[in-house]
Length: 588
Image 1: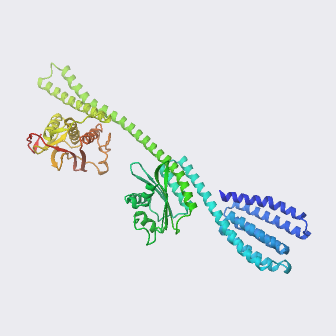
Image 2: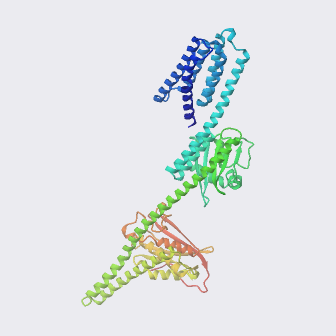
Image 3: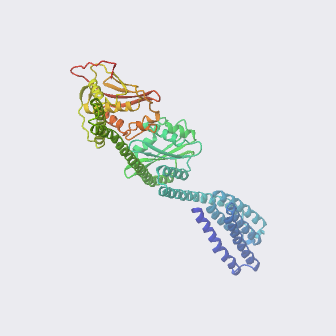
């Protein structure tokens, strides 16, 4: 932006000063006709030549017009000095002006090149001038010293101004990115890239602190820099250092921190953490950390590491602080956008899962209900022709399906209570054998095709809510029966484990893949590998997990595909007033 404006200013100066000068010198007093025509021709030649260079550059951007235009000006001034020797002093001033203007437009390197050309031109013009028109040696020495000095000062001031302007443009681009692509990842990447360019840093990053302690980091640098995953791991390791970490110090002190001498042997030995090792491997000498503040809250840290030795300047630190204040607002907005998008996605998924759940529940309820009605209708229609033993069989089957329907309704009611957080737990000592026997009695029809092996030592008791513990066992047993082949055994076992009792339900079904084991307790989850006959409501294991946790216990899973699954329920142990004998290894 600054460079474009400077080019426009230079073009306007050439146009509005060069052309009037070309006409005005013809009427200037004190000049001979030959001198007037020489000056006018020189001005026109410079303006026309520079304009031609601009036209060529418009069509061919790689054309070196920024270099050729000032060289043309120096050449024109040199020819004028040779043609009009008494204009040597004025020519030196013009040399200085054109070199300074070119430095402002094109930078320090161009200015130094042109200052060398101007010095050569001045020496040649002075040597060709008559003795009376020559300048003294002191003037030439002063010219040789002043021109490079002015070029260096102008170049540094211009570079600083240009760098600041570009940094502001990049910050504006970051704002634009937040508007067009407001997600957190792109916003942090844009901020980090802006900091790196503005500070001329080897590596720059943004680290955000989440309310739950999770750190989000974004980094930018060359090919040897850490990947985003590595940077995130390094940041988490850094936080574990506590007060010994510069990052933690900035979060606590809420003010900028400058660390110097990263690669020196005499650096502060208290900081030798992951960041220090990584920055040293990149050749960094200094690190600047500025807090990202929103009001009185520090939400993260803006970091910049440079290979330049020594601390950053006061102006650079002030600029980085101002940048951090604006970047914090952008980061907060991007983080809020990500959270809203995640919430919307979660709500959409939940809505879809509820629709699928209602469809499955309708199917699960309709199946036993249809069976009950079918058996009862058969008995009623053929009452006089069906033998009594056949009538009893049909009614028994209707009763079994009614029990299954009752179990499903109870499961739905349990889920509704858990979802509404309307559950009261009344823990009391209870024998595991009694709970297992009760659950098996209620599931006679469900477990009819399986051999259930009970391995519960006498006197083992837990502190649990009878109804809740029964629901846990019921759901685990139903799950084992559903995913086990017909005739395969199901083992119920209980054993003390320190202050707890671990009750396990094991099957020899197809098992659960490792990547699914963390999902089976999620509400409505159904494995894609389940066949139609194995699909249920998707809430049984969710209920088992929630009831276990409400009783102060925990539920875990061990499974191997093709071998089977075992669910472990750990509850606090209790002491019963009298033990209940249990025959281990009895099959039902």
